Image (cartoon, rainbow, N blue to C red; front, side, top):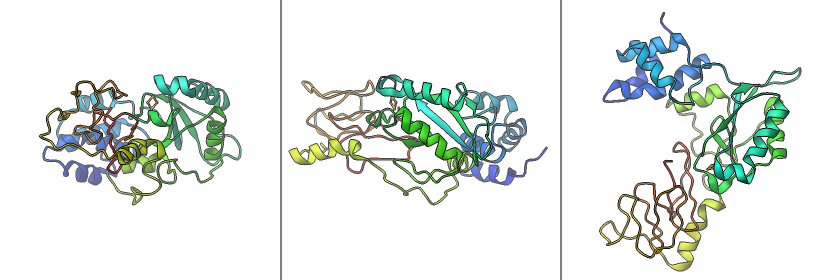
Length: 281
Ligand code: FES
């Protein structure tokens, strides 16, 4: 059965030299329209791309961002990966489970007077460890949270109050966010602060010390983002390498410079000229 958004599915597929490359944003469009990954959406994607429904389903069931049951108007994530966990993420998640009376990946019941629903999920590292413990709402960052601030956040969302991401725009609904992830611009890309002080520490240190990025052909530079200059005591935040003394080197988004914790989730934020690049993890 055709879906009413088939034309937009075809539009997404048409963006790519190989149409099937568009499957991920197409699935986000399905979620923005149907609220979840539906059998009709899977069939429509398969039809547009000329692949089987099983192939589409294989992708949709692999990634946790694709939901096979409805989530709330605001899908709240709590990072419980190592750093956030020890900084309070586990406490926040426990507090929200109790406050919302839900388990992981469940939607809280809508109470009388609520204007929106909230669902809860524990999430893995969002490469935002410099703001631990970190939460997300419809994939926008909420930094440096506490159990109390988390409870207030979900109460405000349920009450329909306007809430802004700590590093992004005013929070929109799940379906609206999914449409943005499908590649339809909402005009808010540059809304809100892009980088907070914790992301800019490395840039500040580099400027104070007169450091600058080495050229690509500089011996010892980290061209692939995975090598280390001998004797460099720089930090390695995500299991990748670092080059102290060359604070601008971050060519593949996998090296980092001591003291600089740039963050980047899904390409939403970046650190202008920063001596850092913890990005694609
Ligand atoms: S451990 Fe939570 S953002 Fe990295």
